[in-house]
Amino acid sequence: RKQRGARLPTVTLEATFTQQSLDFPFDENRTASVKLHLPIFDSGEISSRIAIAKERETQAAASLAETRQAVREALVRSVAALETTRRSFELARQQLAASEGEYQQIAALYRSQEATSLDIDSAETSLAQARRAVALGALEAKLAELRVWHAAGSLKSTLLSKEH
Image (cartoon, rainbow, N blue to C red; front, side):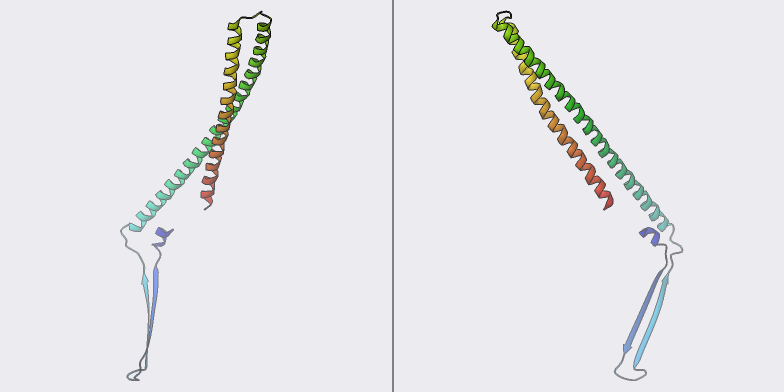
């Protein structure tokens, strides 16, 4: 808008009022002048500045749209990762329940001397791995949740910057 305004005429009004202590030739003197500046021949300078300003505006709008799209994609990826992590965590909990049941069954067989110490060691290892997987799954779920919150916060700040 500023560059387009350079094509408009500029009007300047100047006025002076002088009062003299002597009355010769006049006791007061008043002048007024109007100046009009009309850019007719500017060698295309104003047109080129307008074109540059339009191009910069277009680039800024494209950059803003690209940034918003990137933030939306990050949010969608974060939510998808959160859902995947929650499902993995639920599977780890089910695996832990199965490992605990298997361990109790092997322990009962071991006490009745129907299983070997190798069987009980294998069941203990499986149970420990299942417990580790549950702990790791819980941590990964919390981290995925934090990533979603972070992405949502980024989206909010980007959208708020549009309004201001």
